[in-house]
Length: 463
Image 1 (cartoon, rainbow, N blue to C red):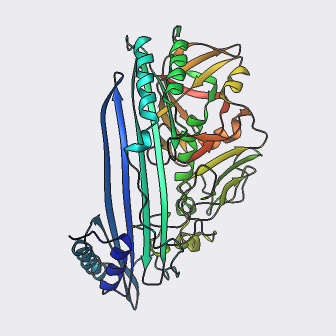
Image 2: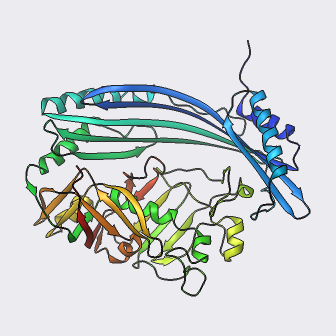
Image 3: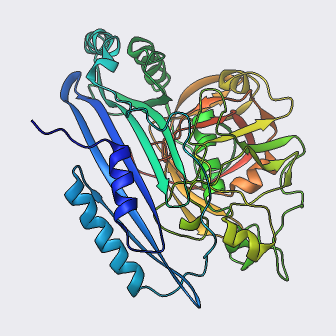
């Protein structure tokens, strides 16, 4: 009986087989489990697992270093050795890299020898029966539910010819549910992120969806315009993730982003948001624990394959309203004369003095809107970070501090940078989940924000 090689064996054999001057091998094992439902009935469920191997070969020459990178699913030594051959060949054929640097040195981490972590359908042992209860309640009340839960546990192993042996286990879970009355004439959405589904209660989120559909018993047509608008933490996360993603130092240095200083350079050190605003990342942030080192298979404006294994440290992107950091690799840090700040996998927005919940901000609104989710967000103007997008599955009218009806969807045009200057009230920071980007970036904590004149640029007929 043959057994599959361990991730550590794949790494060591690949490093030993490489004929390039240096090599980095990244092995990522995943296991996942999901449930999907529609019309109050489970439709699919499944478990999946996989092993992905990336081999990065570095060919050193008199004029620099060339890199060959190959990534593929692989489970045995023959497949991995074939990847090594391809990477070595690609490195020899490549031009020298602009971001060339010494590889990161290191030693074996204490947990290097540990096996991959896994999940299974058993992660839903409590969720699945509760979903059945929620389906029954919804069906009895003339409502239908659509949604999914997904849980993945990824274990990444990074090894290099310079001695790095790093391992990280990352559980990632998220869920979302949309409810409609059987007439299908309105909808409401809720969603969230979780590490293990111990904190997900389908009965509770069905009750919240029922409450929101109840708000839609009265419909109000409103024209486009600027409205006092409450963004719950999920909508704030939609906008802050985009803000982080476009915060590359090279783009700013080259005059291509909102963080470009007129005449050249970046705006690091400038007041860009209201005092008290702090946007930051930290791999060990409670509830949002994320990978603490770089592992990348390709260089980009914000990352470099030469940085594999580099620590990701706690970073303030905006502190007390001042832009303090931009995304950099070691290469872009040298070009822009900024500190090295690799891209993180979590993001937190804090506002000094922020307190209370979305409901508290609604209670303080004389007349305005509550926007429960944003959708299809795209850049209109990178120089001002103007974004456009649509509201979806729940825009509600607020009158006298109470929600009094369902409003038509809108297209909006706003810049998250301007919003961080213009908000009038902020709630307490809480774990959140972006409707738009949560599938890719689920580790966020953000407050609800109240924006005095949020720009709803046109009415949307989307349902």
